Amino acid sequence: MALALLASAAAFLGVLLIIVGFHQAGGLAISAQRRRLEKLEIYTAPAGDISVPLALRQQGSAWAERTQTNLTRAGLALKLHEYMAFRVLVGVAAFALVLTLGAGSGLAVVAGLVIGAFAFMVPAFFVRRRISKQVERFNDQLDEMLTMVSNSLRAGFGLLQAFDLAAEQSQPPMSTELHRLLRDTRMGSSLESALEKMGERVGSYDLDVVITAMLIQRSVGSNLSEVLEKVAYTIRERARIKGEISTLTAQKRLSGWVIGLMPAAFMALMLAISFDYMSVLFSDPAGRVLLLTAIILDVIGIMAIRRIVAVDI
Image 1 (cartoon, rainbow, N blue to C red):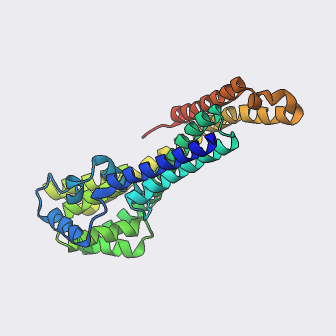
Image 2: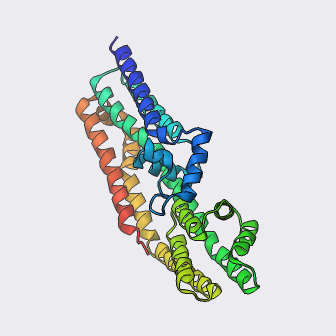
Image 3: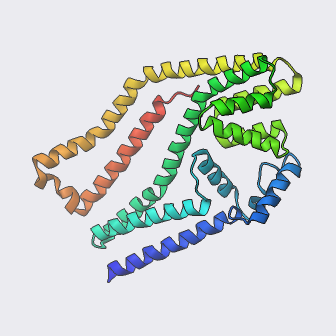
């Protein structure tokens, strides 16, 4: 009976969170007419307002806009309400699974809430990982793209023609972002605005450097081909230094993983040698609390070591 009540409560909580997710995403689930109005306002509104879409200013929130931007950067074709519904379902499923395995005990409820919260955050970790991978792939192609644009400018092409040529000869995600840039300019947006929106979509520091250099060049005037060559050289040197730092810190990062996984390996060894001796951790309530505490501290230790050896350039 208690298990059925807890399962019902979990289902109610899941439905409630899904409704909240749909409400938060209300600013993004707009009609075709609203999307056309939004595009019209983007190109007619003052410069200070174009960064926030019409629907979000009216109904949504900064959190909804930021989350949708992260989904776009990760290359995931998901709407905000779909993403939030998936996260809630994963969390509720993890909670129900732990509750079922624990036979509805009080400790199972506490453990289920903790694991359910962790499962709720797993899709967010996945999105961040996807973003870092997409940005890394974009940065790997940025040097080649700048070289192609610089050579095209030297050959007499215009800047937009050079971007078009680079888009045709590049691979995603670089080609995708260049096509979006060209699409924005063809729809009436200025090149400066299209470049700024491209930087917001990608979220790459290297691209921000390139866009800043191009905007300064268009303001004060200079040889754009030489500017892009110097920026490409800077990006190559930065990538080389990052590679050297990664090589020098590889041993410390491996040591962090070894130290972090050593408790789990020792526990598995003890379970194989003397299962009765270690079974107290699973059967006794105090042992379960200690086991959960050890897992949390171990994860925190691994994250701390990874943060220490991470060097930003």
